[in-house]
Length: 183
Length: 409
Image 1 (spheres, rainbow over the protein chains, first blue to last red):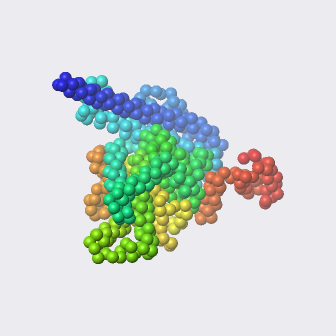
Image 2 (cartoon, chains in turn cyan, blue):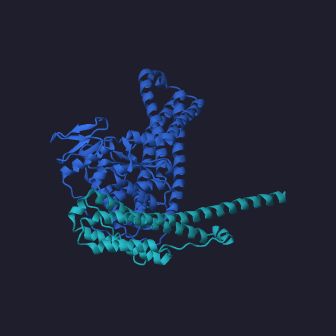
Image 3 (cartoon, rainbow over the protein chains, first blue to last red):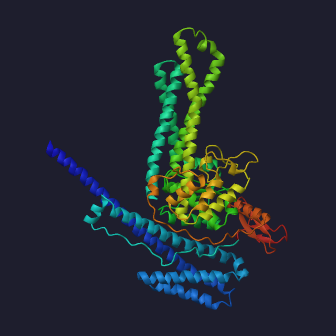
């Protein structure tokens, strides 16, 4: 009888351990997935810029420098792949894009171009998606790290060597620096 | 965010059971009275249960398609309104939702929106053409974030079930009272006559209790339903800010919606609680005056403008400041997380600069696009609208008589 009770307890414990382990794995995968979402959007931004420059070129004859800076920032961002460097390069690209849109304000013809408007909407949205993907990543990391710290899942996390994940930190507080589309 | 989902699920079940008990009790009393014997009560419970079960089944499996059909929503592709799709995708990313909700447009001028679908995988978001025409990007984002919050907080299934429960209670009580009216006018002497003996008197008392209960039950159920509906609206506002980090977008969207006095023709009593603001209002009334299923808009806007951080705790504090009392409106589990989340700085409110005539034309064009119209711009500058039934290869411009190739769109 005592032996049977012992078996039952062991079985319940086993199920609980497996359940917690699995949920930790799921959460870790969600963190990874959230990170790859950021990559998807950064890639999308790289793809959009050549089209944008091509469309704007005809209208912005006197703004060669702005356009060149934009193209340069893009290739810089595409060329780096290590963590810190890359965040910096992508940040520089964001700046170049917002500078570009400030300059665009002086070109009403360009702003009336349907093709350009569509591209501007795409780029605005991609900038937002990057920001929201980062935000979602941080949300997932917070949730995962909390699970790792809290009892009882912290025991399992220690046992199977689940490591806390790092937050995505931006040095200065991020602003909504994307200019708005004006219809 | 995830704690809120769990708390919501638990609460949903409690309410579900409470309303179920109310339904069973109602079924019992009515059955007991109409058949005038013990077995009648059991039969009443049974019938009430069956009505509720069938309605629940229908709403679970095809509730969303029924609601979308009733409200005249049409599923659209991204090319009909790219910005709408972009904004929905932004919010999907912010909410870490693995599935993109289906996007619908309702061809009506009144600005409004709702979300439906029993689980996130099957969710849909519907907005009216008027909303798209009226809102700027940030406002649209606020509205979509609110709808996305209903999806991630699992409000839709819950509100549908609660609605069905309310509907069953109203239906049963109504049948009973009507039946009573008819039978008492026909055979009142049989029922109430000869009440000199004790049994008759008891019967009358039970009958009165039943009538009172049949009148009160729907009212109480409706009050519970409205209270919960209002809480869910506050919660969806709070979650929306958690997603966008930009309360001004939603605040000014709500203001714009409440400022119109257009009627949403396709909305009715059943679908009303689903919209971002209550679409039902009396003639000549502003939507802002109605408070039943939704909190007053002015109050929601004030709370949103008082927020300083995108946490649930901060929303609750803003709510308490505005209302002057500390009524808890958000699940306590969501309030534990008090790490400050900074808001995005406002970029100045840029209005959609369009006069009412262009606005009407844009709205008309959007509605036609939703209905599958094609647009053809003639060299003389005239924009020709081709209905989806138009199959001719050539079309003559009504202004300059040029022959245009209708396939070259």
